[in-house]
Image 1: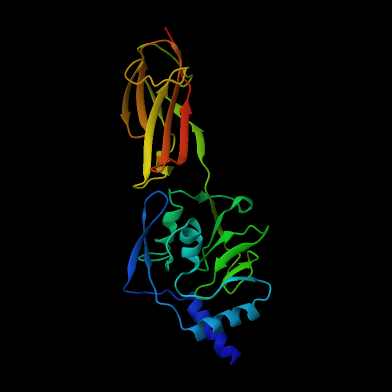
Image 2: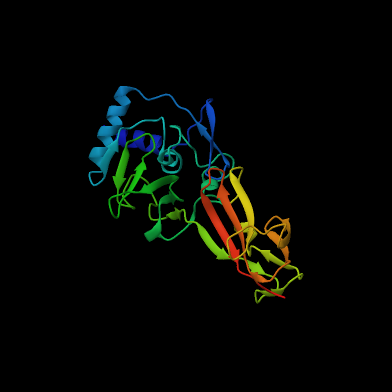
Length: 268
């Protein structure tokens, strides 16, 4: 009987689930994620799953009941951020094309294990979040319970193969075409992001160029003539002084994603 239960629950743990009831989720930056709504299992199936996993993995801590209304990917990347209860498959058309939108030029980016917030087990079709308990992760085990566990402890194979993500605001310098940062009144210089292909993008991402004087006042159209082309600004100043040029990316709700800046010195 135990062998039968093991085979049954391992199949339910690892299988991709398909349904006719699809919904659309959005990453923090506004990319679309495909998800599905599933009916709940029977009370007997829920009780059996809870019993099986708590007894089979005694070193994990039970946090919430088994359910097929959501899975590990949805819990880690969607529901833990306040999103809708649903099931989220990592792959829709090609390997991990659905789940990878969360960290591919989006709100999250790769990091080292000691700084991680989200974890993707790339050979296990599994995701987790860092627990408030030091050294532990929390994840939903397929249709099984939500569990707190050591990073490599659980019912999945290859749990040592992990990809780590976190969110940090990026602060970096702009590139200036004149190199030194010192220029003269009436002379044009270009300011640009070094690697624009790495910037987060999506329907919720808003870019802003800002040019300010030493008092923090906007000088575009007064002390500075500015021509903008995406991540490149061509600027000539009409008055001497020390200025600050910045290119900022923020979410539509106001949260900053990245800020690139340069401080030109303008002489007569």
